[in-house]
Length: 143
Image (cartoon, rainbow, N blue to C red; front, side):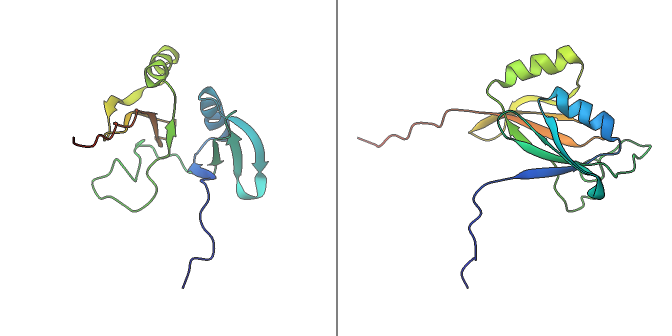
């Protein structure tokens, strides 16, 4: 049976947080703006000027140990571990993160042949990946 509809694009990722105001302030610093709230679902929609969207779901319980249950525990549970965002200049982002006091949890390093990456965490320890895409290697044909 043929797939009924092709997936055309990515719309958003939902990020569960424990404190709506704290999370909105954090993500606003990264360039997102709250554009809608869905009180019935304890969620909002945030968007960058380039149209990148996330939803914050603000019904989590903050645990006292401050660990991410998907990434920081020895037994790995299924689930979405992090969103990854593309930026033009990862080094400029790194300088800004340091200047504003947002800790970098994994500093800039290559991740495969097509990108360099760094990782941070939000106030609830949700992991955020930032990538700078590298030029594709030129394919050459043997002479």
